[in-house]
Image 1: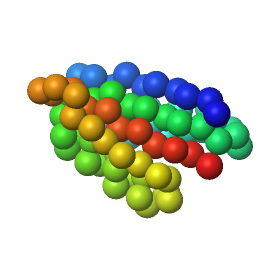
Image 2: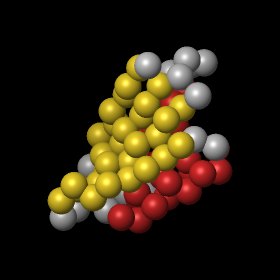
Image 3: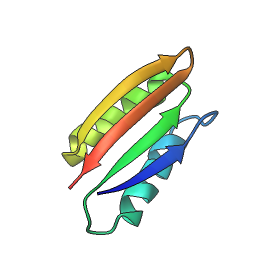
Length: 75
C-alpha cells in the first residue's frame, strides 16, 4: 500500500484540502494512505469532513501545539 505525505503546514483552507485531493488523485486506482500535516484544527476538521463525504476511513491526531496529522485510507 502506497503512502503519500502532504505538507500543508502554514497553509489556510482550502489549500490543505486541494493538496490532499491532488495526492489522492496521484494514487490513481490503487489503494493507499494519504497523511496531511496541518498547523490548525480548522484545516484538520475540514479534511475529516472531506474524508467522510468521500467515504474514506479518516483519523486525525494532535501531535503538538499547532501540529496535526490527518490520515486517510483510500480504497
